[in-house]
Length: 79
Image (cartoon, rainbow, N blue to C red):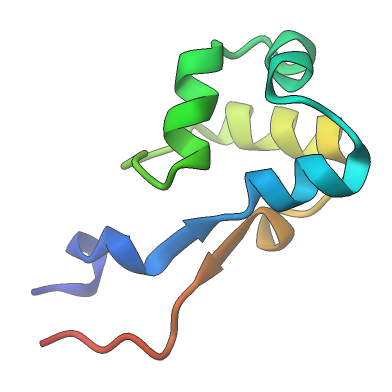
């Protein structure tokens, strides 16, 4: 399977960042202008894509860089 199809290796750290900042998912949704449902999909690692404009808005709201929001599991190999 090509690497771009193995999306299960990508992890969104939204829960951790929200907890560190004392912010709720609802507050983030309001601040960023993204629906609670879409943020929940992202938070639960079910998203298959993210718009750059959304990524920038999330990073601005959370005062973070994209690399703090997402990690890639390098130990999981393609089979």
